[in-house]
Amino acid sequence: MRDFFSLARWMPGLVALLEYQRAWLLPDLRAGLSVAAVALPVAIAYAELAGVGAVVGLYSCILPMLAYALFGTSRQLIIGPDAATCAVIAAVVTPLAAGDAARHWQLVMTMTAMTGFWCLIASRFKLGVLADFLSRPILLGLLNGVAITIMVGQLSSIFGFTFDESELIERIAAAPSYLALIHWPTLGISLLTLAVMLACRRYRPQWPSSMLALAVAAALLWGLGPERAGIMVVGTISGGIPSLQIPEFPPGLMRELVLPALNLAMVSFVSMMLTARSFAAKNGYDIDADKEFRALGVANLASAVSQGFAISGADSRTAVNDANGGKSQLVSIVAATVIALVTFFLTAPLQYIPTAALGIVLVMASWSLIDLRGQWALRHSDNAAFWLAWITFVSVLFMGVIPGITLAVLLGLFQFLRNVMRPTDQLMGMNDEGVVHTLGHNEEVKAVTGVLIYRFNSPLTYFNAAYFKRRVLQLLGREPHPPKCLIIDAVSCFTHQDISVMSMVGELHKELKRRGIQLLMAGRRSQMTHWLHQAGIRVGEDGILLYPDLYEALRMTRCYREPEEPVAEGEASPVAPALPQERLAES
Image (cartoon, rainbow, N blue to C red; front, side, top):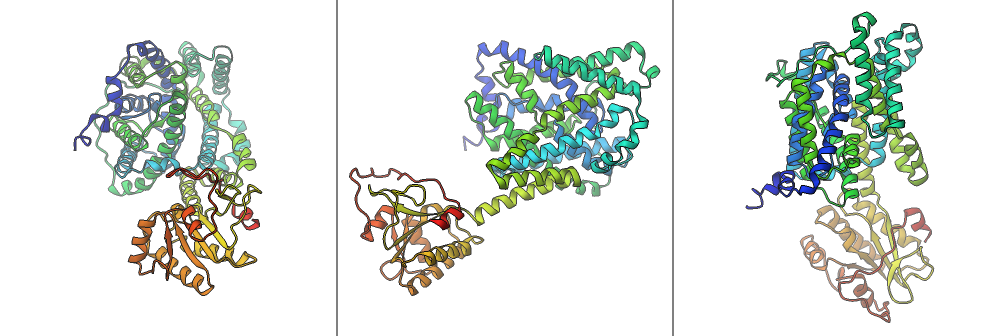
């Protein structure tokens, strides 16, 4: 009970701050200022992408960063607006809002709150394992597709025209017809912004290139007057503390947001965990996936309360934090404080920022997400992962962001089910020293005469039990001389009780008995005895023989020779890695 109410359980970030070391203060202050310098222009640009006012992007940084500093377990991770998150929000909310700016903003806040609730529910049921659900190849294809979608969508801001088409492929196909509509002053501002950013990254990489580029573009338009040049700007930003808004739209619209919010929670969490884990590994500490899910939920609720939009882990700002020596969650507090001061007192200069410059910032941010080379390189290491990544990528491009994300989630599920339903398996043998190894990797390992040792590398359950039986009988049929005994390694596959599995074991035992083959189970003897008795399957001389491990099972078949140096009690025997089924068949 005491653990349930402990501060470390609910606010691990606060516990870390209470143990703060004075030597961390200067690095954290420097990192916090650097993060704020990068986050400010990016937040305004992502607000444009989400279809809301610039100040909403700033609201989405302040309370969420403070909330994560208290509830998160990562010392380096920076929470904030994210390209993929904003692209999902825009794809869902824009058609529902039907051009009503107020309703659009309210729908964004509602979807953000729903995303937060989904994260809290997932944390309550300890679903942090979902961080591994969308595999890296699937997420790679997803982010590549989202990045290209964003870049094409920003061409209208960069060139100064408006797309009539809503989908990516249609926009690309119609691009030549828009060449005559280019607004040259807008294109000039875009090129100036791009030149400043590239020059800054080339000669002063430690400077905040996006902030400097936006400052140059805004200063130029302030001097010229945007109305004279006909260039679109952000316009007046009403800073200050946001007033409470109660959503005013039919409840039916909320039903349209439930599943997209679930998709958004899933993608945001997986993306955040990839960033958090990489920097945690680099800096030598661990993070708790379930607590991170809760922290993301609290941060999204904080964003909704402050009238912001959904947020996630920001890899670029996290990298800035790490590069500047940030040591703790104080970096997020410092950055949030700086952004709050700008939001409440210094919004006047922001009104001259051209939307074309924001488009360039978004394109550059999206460009950093693209890794087509890495996606193509998967063909050498994992052919299945290669096709998963490219199917996801093409789906996002042709079907849209939301259907692409849904397909990515389904692909992740199917990939998991395929690995569980059709796992690798192994035939085992023994070397000259009497140690059990996998057959096929080492010529010194030979099959035991009269005995077939089988290992199934997945928990047995109702949807792979039939495959397990089929594989066992298939391997027995390939043996030139039928073995007298079949030993199954129960440790790797009998992990829980399942009536379908026990029924399959009973059927397998009868079939083996008909062929004159004795069935032995090695490992989990107490559990297997209990489970088999409950299923009405005989155990003992007239039934299935159970032994504590493979060596004892082999010893009782009189086929095991003691090694010169016996393996210590409780010590795991060396086992070679799993054989793919194709090579297993050859062995």
